[in-house]
Image 1 (cartoon, rainbow, N blue to C red):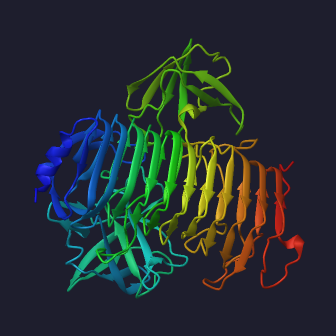
Image 2: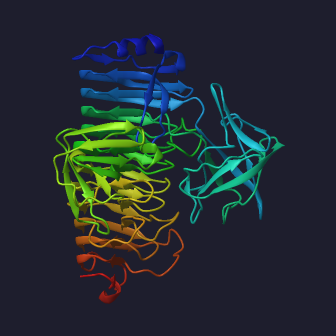
Image 3: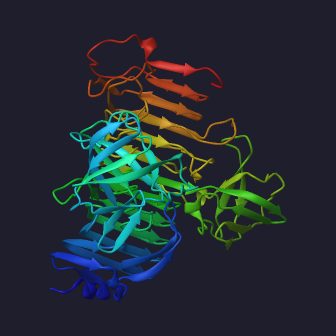
Length: 568
C-alpha cells in the first residue's frame, strides 16, 4: 500500500481529465507531506497553511478515496481547490490525532470557580502560569489568548445544555483579551489539582451543573476540511468528518457547488462531543446553484450551513471611482467584485433602496481596501454606505438534511436568488433557520427575495437560547425603514415546540405562514409566554391557523401577534 506522501504527490501531479482512486485503508498524514499556501479565507483567519491535497488550475478531475480514512497529525488543511473546473471529491473520512478542543466533566461548581475532570489521554494538557495549555504531538495552544469558546453540554443528550451560557474566555496570569471577539471575554486562573482535575477560578457561566460536560475550543479558524476558491462545478460526495478544527467545507467565489452525503456526527471514532469547531458548510459570494442534499450535520460549535455575501463600506467617492473598506477582520484581503458585475450601494437609512454600480475594474489597494472603477452615476452615493455584489450570489436548494445538537443555529441562507428549503430535520440549540443580513459586525449580505420553506420538521429547537425556530432579523447600527427580506412562504412544516414561538419576522414584505402542524412538547421547560408568530415592521404578512390535530383547540386570536409600529 502506498504511503500518504506518495498518494499526495500523485494527486498533486494529476493532470486535467484525470481520475484517481485510492485503495481502501487508513492513512496517517503528516505536515512533511504538505504544501504551504497563504490564504485570505472569508469567515476564517488569514495566514499560511499546510495543505495536504492541493488542486490548482485543473479541469475534469475526480478524486475517489474509496471510503478510506485520512488521519491528520498536526495543523493541516486536508483539501484545497483553486481555480478549477469540474472537480469531484468523494468517499473519504477525515479525522485528526488530537481534537482541536478539550472537554471535561464538571466535577464541582462554586460561586467563583468550577472544576473539570479531564481525560488526559484523549485531551492532553498542562497548566503553566495559571493558564490552560492544550497539548498535541505537533502543536500546543495556550489559552492565554485567542477566541476560546466555553460551552456546557448535557451529558445525556450530548447537546448544548438547556439555557446554557456561552463564554469566550482566556486563561492565566498573562491573559490577553482579543479585540475581535464578538462578545465580552472572561478571564480564568487555572490550577492543576492532579489526577485529571483542573480548577478554573473566575466567573463561571450561570447555571453550570455538575455532571454535565464543559467543552472548550482552542484553535484559530485556519484549517477547514475542504477549502475551494474561484472554481466551477464542484461535487463533494460522501465526505465524513469525525473532527476538524475549523469548518467542514468553505467555498469562496465558486460557481455551482453540489454537496451530497456530507456527514459530521458523533461516531465510535469520536473522542468527545464536538465534530467541527465552526460551521459545517459555508458559501461566500458563490454563484450558479448551491445544492445540498442528504447531509447530516451534528455537534458543531457553530452553524450547519451559512450562505451569504460580503458587505463593504464606502470610504471615498471620486469621479468614476469608489474606495471601499473591508470591515470584518476575517474578510481582509478578499475582493468579491469582477469586471462586468453590478454591485449595489444601500441608500442611507433604508433596507431596500439601492444605487446600482457597474464594475469596470476592481482591485485590492491593500488587505483592508478595494477600489472600484465605474461608469455609473455616483452622485447619490454617501460615504459610510454599505455595498454588496448581488451578481455573485447563488440559487440555493437544501433538501433531505438533518442537523442538531450544535451551537447555535441550523441554516443561515441570505441570497436574493431563489431559495428552497424542504424535507429537512432540525434539532438545533437556537434558531433552526435564521435569515439575517448584518451591517454591524459580521458584514454578511444577501436579502431574501424568493424563499420557500416546506416539508421540514423543527424538533424542540431554541433550548440553548431563542424563542422562535424561524427568525428573520436584519442587523444594523442605525434605524432603517423598508423591507430587507421579501416573498417568503412557510407552509406544510411540522413544529414540535416546548414554548409558543414559531416564526419571528422583522422588516419582511410578503410573508405567508400557513398549513403547518404544531405539536406541543414537554421536552424542555417553557421559558415565557410569546406569540406563535410575531411580525414587526412587515408588510403583507399573513397567517392562517395550523393544520392537523393539535391535541387542544386554541382560540384563533392567540395564533398571531402583530406589533403595529411600522406595519402596513
